[in-house]
Length: 134
Length: 134
Length: 134
Length: 134
Image (cartoon, rainbow over all chains, first blue to last red; front, side, top):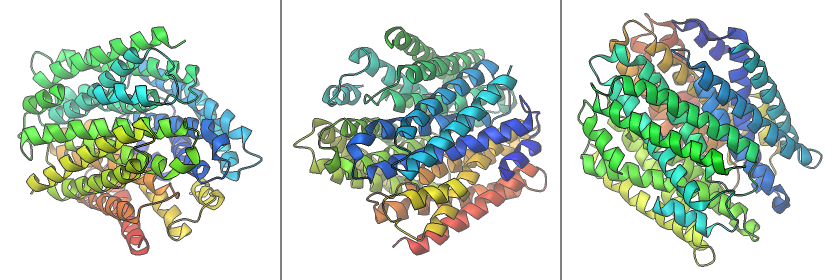
């Protein structure tokens, strides 16, 4: 999160919301994207893969949406509040869907447990952001 | 669009909505993503770049969101309607914002005119999809 | 490909290589990215998923690399030949690896057959580009 | 990096190279991707934008390539060494090109200084990885 915070501070324009909350959200989104990519692949390596199909699918969706959301939130120049709100909303939904899938397998697979927790943290940060992007 | 249609037909599961509309939406989303990436870069090459800052920014956002949306829509296995709806909604907003920016410069720059038209087609396909994903 | 071609023509700067070959490469890369994303998901929906693990993995890699390569090739402003060559080389390798995986299952799954063909076309366009980016 | 390390440890398969080096590389790649996205946007917000065109362009390329490389490196199932080597090589080149651009403006713009440093760290981690992926 250190570089992200410094980049926000070094930007010539003011962020569209509180800097600390923005940096925290970008950090959690990037952790979540990486965790989802890794969880999808870890599921591919499991013997009970047939039971993990829904988890892999929601991992891939969540990773794609988190990458896009993290990039859009990293831009402070001439932001559209409407776009930010609808994208962060979609990201929160993706995290919620993926967390629910991962949590089904959390007792059996540590990677699902970790990924579910990363999704819940990310969902929370997205919902925090929605409070401050107006 | 040909390969996209054939891939939907070859999938072992039924799509979550009408195949023709889905293939058309994925095709327009991918055209829009490429046009936005190219328009952002064409703006970078223009002498009046200072006037095109808002256009570059919305091009980059729209490209990121279209890539993610195109990927998610290409998956037919265990879809979440709620996720699909919120993401396609965000994509329609991104296209609408970007189209409005591009249209400001359409009379001066052919790439903005083309990109604005691609965004409008994509926005329309996204709104068509929202009608059928329930 | 139509919009891609028009966008290259509308760009204020000359492309770093022959326009026709560039537009053809970008088009094949985008078709390949979508086909790989769809094939990974179609494999997830198959009953013999355990035999398709290598195919899913190489589909996901190929899609990620194709999206990045398509975006980089869409930029004509101040290109780095060294970067372009190493990225297009990596894309050709990703397509070759993925095609080889898909071809193993082509007789059993139409989506693998279609995706393998898309990867081969894309690999060929990448190799054609490497001849002209100097 | 904490979640990334734990995800590697929780994966059912052994990584294709030393875990510590892999986790460090993924972490630097993700920091670099975010920094490049933010630097491109910060450049868009500067008054001397016309002098920053090359920096914006290389930032965007580097971000795209880092996102793809970070995703591919997060997968441990049935890796292709040839693909990994050519992609990590392309990522090192992208970081080197972008660092050189950013360093030109480092004395004037703090965001370029920070981004140049992130690119150099990422380039170094990529070159470290190339030593161990054989």
